[in-house]
Length: 191
Image 1 (cartoon, rainbow, N blue to C red):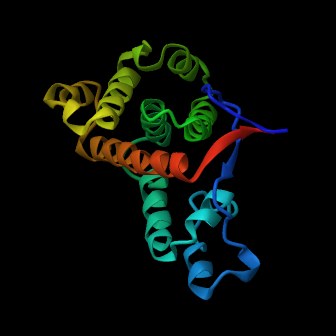
Image 2: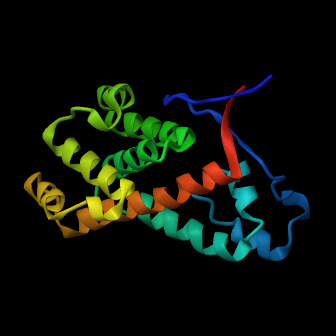
């Protein structure tokens, strides 16, 4: 029997939707078209199949997600992933935190950062560069107005340019949206 996952982990749980996902075999042409560009281009997940109930939104969401998280210019991929982790910690999205923490670990070949975040949450102490990224994303995810000029300056002080800072804003924002959809539409489960 499966049980819900309630603690942060780098072991990616199974996401169980509350609603029946679209059946790919019987999906409409509009739903098939919307599912053509999945976020990781590695397959069609239960999450995407669930989002396919609203193909018009999904057709916009997936390309936007891909551009924000996998864009070639701007913020390093690992730093976008850390922004996603910070947003997911604030929003208590266990599934997204696990996926993006694992990606951060794979990209950086370090586990100490995510171990600190999962042990200490928003009070985690990181190196100055990653701390500025984590803090900015967490404050922006808590309440946008909590990210103040000093937080933006901290990003500049550790070497982020305007495009990199914008990428961090976008990765944090899209995970505010994704986290809330994940909570509303399903839950992370252990197998």
